[in-house]
Amino acid sequence: MDVVAKAWDLICSEEAALVQPIKIKKEDIDSAWLLFQKYTTQKRPLSFVDCLLIAVSQSHELFF
Image 1 (cartoon, one colour):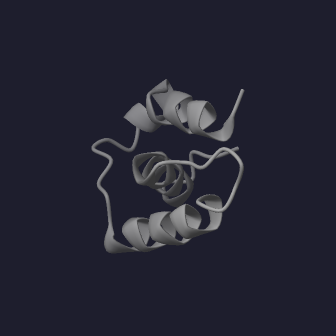
Image 2 (cartoon, helix red, strand yellow; image 1 turned 30 degrees about the vertical axis):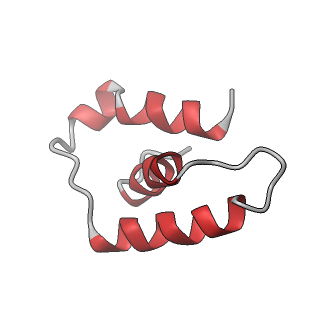
Image 3 (tube, one colour; image 1 turned 90 degrees about the vertical axis):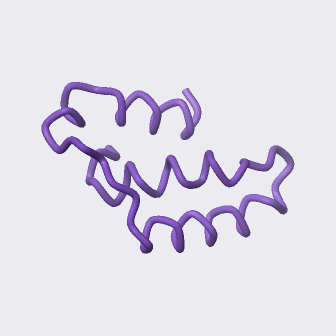
């Protein structure tokens, strides 16, 4: 499972329901922008929305 699918599963999980509503913070957008810049040079780049999804899941401690 790739990292974007994992982030999506975690945000939609029961665990995420405990911290609802999930709000996007400025720090999430900043983190997403850094991820986006990093992954635009990759062979399979991620979209900014994918990077935002990852950043939000990490900031809400839903990741791993």
